[in-house]
Length: 80
Ligand SMILES: [Zn+2]
Ligand SMILES: [Zn+2]
Image (cartoon, rainbow, N blue to C red):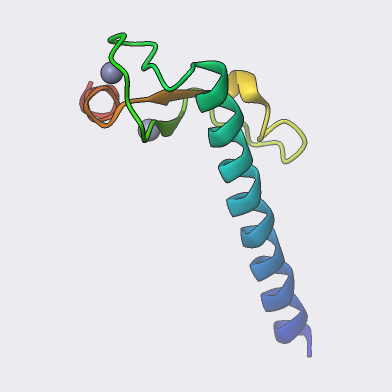
């Protein structure tokens, strides 16, 4: 029973995470007018990149901790 409750808790956290990330991506992309802030190129599918990962759940989905980047700049951001 405990294991099941733990699993349900974990799955619901994942759902919250995915939903939060999707809405962050959407609002940040709209804010950027689908233009990558790093290279200035228009990109239809900007990707959400985590700048600061917060260990606190309360602060984790703060828009200040994320940026949207085009796939090229996103790849560069990770290869640094
Ligand atoms: Zn870019
Ligand atoms: Zn990233």
